[in-house]
Image 1 (cartoon, rainbow, N blue to C red):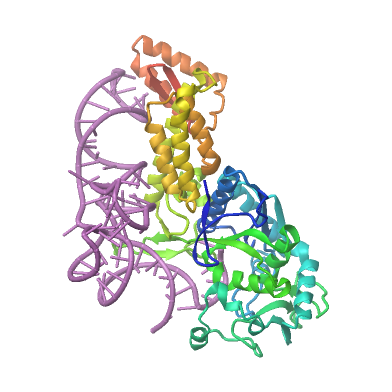
Image 2: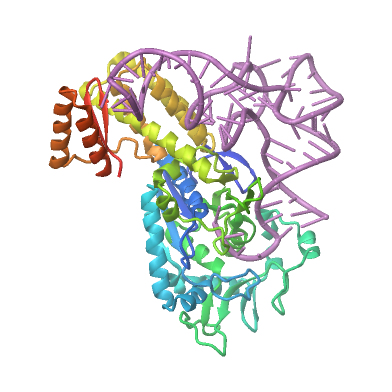
Length: 482
RNA sequence: GGUGGCGUAGCCAAGUGGCCAAAGGCGACGGAUUGCAAAUCCGUUUAUCCUCGGUUCGAAUCCGAGCGCCACCUCCA
């Protein structure tokens, strides 16, 4: 079945084919975090979307080579190429070196990824580890005569690359008319951007390098161009990021690469929409205000905060999967609570199915194969239609409600679907410690004697210890809840 | 002001010309089961698909107008 993806380049759904027709390998570059702070749950939405994309490709039989960068230098506090470096600002604030800051927030990010069951990239690359590649690429642009020098750095002349506006679909005249951005003195066009920034003369930067143009640091956009080409070649299949990157960051990246190579760089561009947050305003106001979350703003929710509220990271993943990645989604505690209940119900059903499956033969009866295939096709159709996870989850729900198949056949399918959903649905409960098992036995004895008071006391005790008991016809089930 | 997008049940959310008297989830209600719970199972519930007009044999789906909301046009996933 063909895989169709919405390509920002062209603004339409397109059938996916690797560049080399005969090959099943796919190069995928995802813009990673700028590690000057923790990731918020809005950032994480994008990474979950990219993970679904990657898992869908793998599910379709492709070999994915996934590269993700870590921006640890050069990302300025505004885009007029005259703000401060976010990393340096943060280091100042926390009284640590920029290197410590980078290390700390990179680790935090990777830990979030792990908790959300996001598959790690094959290659992590840090901007500061690839300064030479970036300098070399700027030199290539220089040889093409597409750069110019100002007092504070080397700039890309967007007027010299006529295709510049194509990607962003920029209306240059409007951009000019609305020119609210204070331009760096001497910039030839409002869209021109810095490739290399010089260190300020009056101040020592923690991160700076020698270059043919003078001591300084790379502009933000050049790192993704240089590193993706380094690891994936001058042409590769997929590049993704947040929707906000279309206009400036990715447009600049495309320009930098294609101005040098003079051929199409990336075949498919995918962008994830924003997560907004319903922010309860003052108690007097009835309607919550919807605002997007900003890493520099104050409505900043981290995964840790969700955990503190009792939400499981994978329940957050489930929350995200219930909406399409190209639609804005509003986060609220209520919506998250509903998702968590849904997620727990889902897991309970799968858990029952699993117990049933463990009692049945591993071989699926022949007559069940067509039924399995029917579900599998429905699931595949959903994910292959531009990653329609809400529809895919509906197929999963229908599967769990189906009672025509054996537990074994159904459970195997659930595991298959979970390769894409990544919800760890079949996660095995951890073994119950002996002392817990003893208490359970004790309670069963009390129940037999109809000593309900004793039985309930033990049940409460176990609950406090993090184990929930579920009496069923087949005996007592134990669920670890913490 | 410019640009892009959205408006589907109490809430979240798929569907974008006939398979839709509209998927799925959450919630609510009734029942089975249970010592009580929990979980599970069965059943029920709620939609003139924002409004008005048009195109069409046929529209939630296309077109026009209006209303409302969101995002982007500093940085941001």
